[in-house]
Length: 205
Image (cartoon, rainbow, N blue to C red; front, side):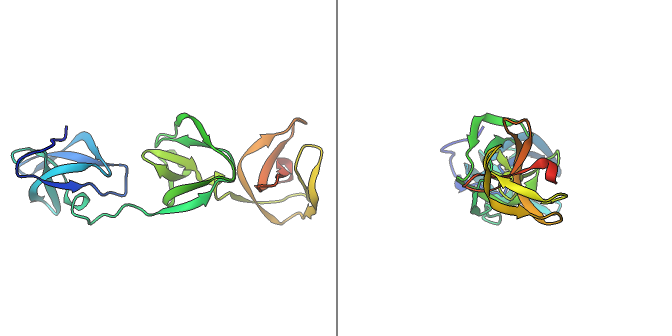
């Protein structure tokens, strides 16, 4: 869709805080979403700006093209979100914006991943971190969830062996990470730390 080597073009890199930027068709004062996009980071040929209502649009592809993007994405007004290094505390699947798995790879527990900005919500309400172009991991695998114990609890490293001599007291708050694991004894446990194995029975919350 994008023209390379267009005469009279100014080439500009798309800068956005989203994965893609919508492309519009403009006829007079009528702006229509073409349902096509350009990717954040793409280099596009631009040919001046026009204003429709209170928004500025920049022509792309050719001097007589009727395709435009919002000017803010090609004039440096919008800055890509900075990345922050976070530690993954629970094996994590990678999802797209529709909460469908991307490939079969997982991020292993205790590895570090760069995330873009703060945790955000998908359309289904899931809290996630963005890690790439249409790639997300569940925030619970990184930040965990605070839960209150309803019983005194031991900390385990296996279904039979305790991790240490601690007793976590009823009423105290514990951060758990990710979905529960089911051990060989048939009981479910939350991970509460690492990299040494530390688990608490789900039944204690």
